[in-house]
Image (cartoon, rainbow, N blue to C red; front, side, top):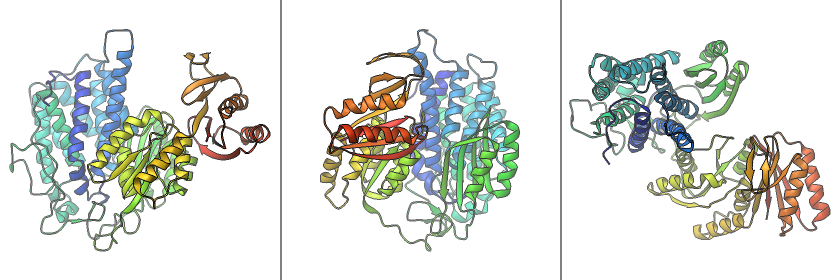
Length: 573
């Protein structure tokens, strides 16, 4: 559908651009994944860029929703939207390419939000693109030409030479980036051997194409992934994904999982990514420490919050360095193991697709371990950081099965999970979404899962088990509010049964006992308790004793959930 062109760069233009960029990356994701050979051929650059922009979109939409819910007629300012875009990209950045894109957006936001203007014109956009390219280059420990950094610099250079409104500047930046992308194989030997352009640069061209569409209403002409495709090949082509990697003289091999492999490519064993709360001085020391440990080091962010990305052989040392610098969280460690990104397609044994798998969203590290031991592929949802649909899609692909049972384990994630299921169905994967509202319902479903049964029978059995499990949680109120049980104050202990506040108390153990009694008054055979990391074992012992003394023939099982948001999860089946 044609977009209404934006005249100036204001909050609405930020929102439109982010949405169009997500759509464009969604169309090009598979093509970008397929041409990903640098810095490692892990076949996920397109996916990482998509997830990074998806997080930016969510942050911008949250700002608009917050203003819509307020009493004032004014919407968000350009500064509000630009900062939200940058922050969302920063906390959601994935991989080397996503981390650099987050810094590019942060650089733009620094200019767009300066002095809190109502809007920016062509001159403002030129300055924003320059700041974006320069700040991204500074964030990379050892910049390499022929990468997304080169493409970003070319876009800024071309925009700097343009005169006119935002549409004129955006189109100049896009054309400059597109020409630079076509030249990347001549700058980076690994791209030339593979016969492809740089995947991160290809993604940035897609994002800049969305910027052109934002200000002109016209979809920008596109590029394909092969090295031989440049601006002169097809000046009227639209941005559409290619069918797959385009080889030049047979140099590119498509591996079993879709990643492009380049013979002889070697590197560190792990990719380590984490968010870090730290002061600037500590981050400078961290850069030096991580630079000595590995390569592909990118540290982006500022104002106390950073996104750290590095490839190392000692993942533990990289995390310990972050602990010394500040408080790392959302830690992700990916193993580039044998038979993975550093081997050629000929050396890699084909991975056999499983018949059936379970993919589950879990709220804490402890439960993630429990689900994994039971054979599930997990997606960790930390407090205040729900996974996006792209993360669920990625987890389903990682499960590598013909049939997948998806457990969202959160009522608020049902629509997100449904969107993910719809997307992977187009890839030929049979997916069943069981609308579990709590991790304890997911545990019940997983307990009756039998992969040898017919798919429909297994789904029915798991759905029945989840539906027969009542769920509750004990948490602490963050603010004063009205509830089904009355008015609660900040700091009150709340007991929620099936999603509604049923008990307001002051003591965790007493509130949990009241909740448990109400649930067991309707009957039950099994009680599941999942303790958060802030709850002492004595609380579980107290509740086990209560069940043992007051409810004959009812068994109790206790798990440690880790940092799961709620103090305690309770299931009764």
